[in-house]
Amino acid sequence: MEIFIDTADPKTIEELWAILPLAGVTTNPSIVAAGKRPLREILPQIRSIIGPEARVFAQVLSRESTAMIDEALSLRELDPNLIVKIPAVSAGFAAIERLSAQGVMTLGTAVYAPMQGLFAAQAGARYIAPYVNRVDATGGNGIKLVETLQSLLDLHCPACSILAASFRTPTQVLDSLLAGAKAVTIPPDVARQMLVSPSVDVAIQRFEADWHKAFDKLSA
Image (cartoon, rainbow, N blue to C red; front, side):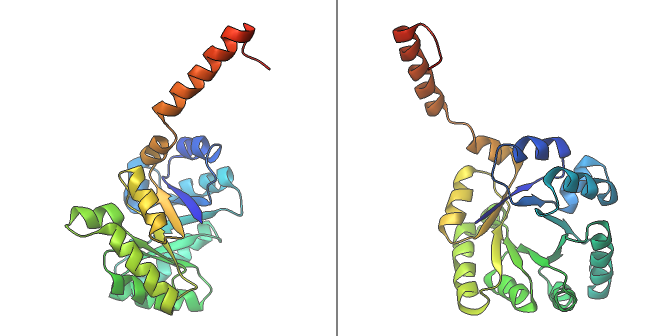
């Protein structure tokens, strides 16, 4: 299982990298645009925080397959180990296939339907990213999509993994993992929710109070 953090903010990455067992960082054009710093600046900084072995993802903006390929190769010049996110659309399937033939690892992103994800996997994508909450928001069932996609991958494309994305609650993350997703990318606000538990805090406070009452100190 792999857990990624979905952000391009260096301070947030530093904070959560020190706490969570993260495999890397995912970004998308909206996330990068929110920070008002281009990828040529932010990718090297992210890499310096997480080290050479962790995985980093960035997405192309082009809409035509040849342009997607050119943009993907340009992004890889910024980070040779970058995994390139390609929209799982007709032009994207062609780009994924050609990039895979060149040894470029890709992720088929913006997956809203099972066959869309399967086509990206068959084209050679290493990951596919179903948008769990966005599917829910359009009247679908994001967790069921993850479950269906995982069944398809098990049968037909076992080298490809689901990297479930688009979460608004910790429960969606948990349910995606239970549905078979091998990887998830979590927004920082959801990650912080997962690190906080009032019940745990109350239990620890009770332990401390009982210990202090018995020994008049808070050390062993």
